[in-house]
Length: 145
Image 1 (tube, one colour):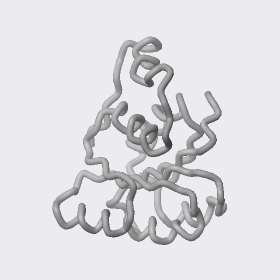
Image 2 (cartoon, rainbow, N blue to C red):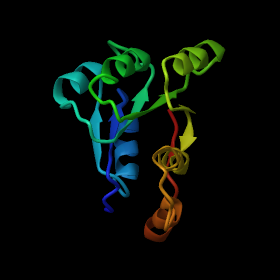
Image 3 (cartoon, rainbow, N blue to C red):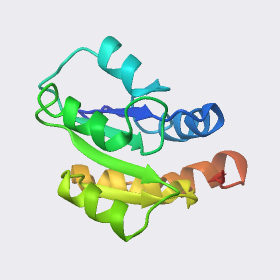
Image 4 (cartoon, rainbow, N blue to C red):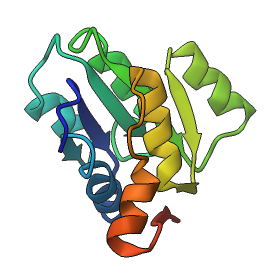
């Protein structure tokens, strides 16, 4: 795995979605996963290092917007992506007002999330993750919930 200079933190309460995202993204990035806001805040140490948070909106306890607001002071250099199957005009406005760097509606193809992360972090692809997966397995995983 290349040293990208940042890590990905996935906060997704759906275990299957969490595992699929982890398995896809760890091909290219260091990844840490949590199933809820509470454990993320309790376990993940604050850092001045770059982090990309991939946060589900609809979770037990704090939703993704509340979690982001709690994370910002602890991770000043982080980028935040909100993932949801519930995006409507109201949630989109709330997420933008909360300062999310990107919004990704479910379902999405895994290459889309990689591209969004790479765009946010200013990475240029040498070999696309799509090509890497095709070369290794001949299949493209898709997150469908």
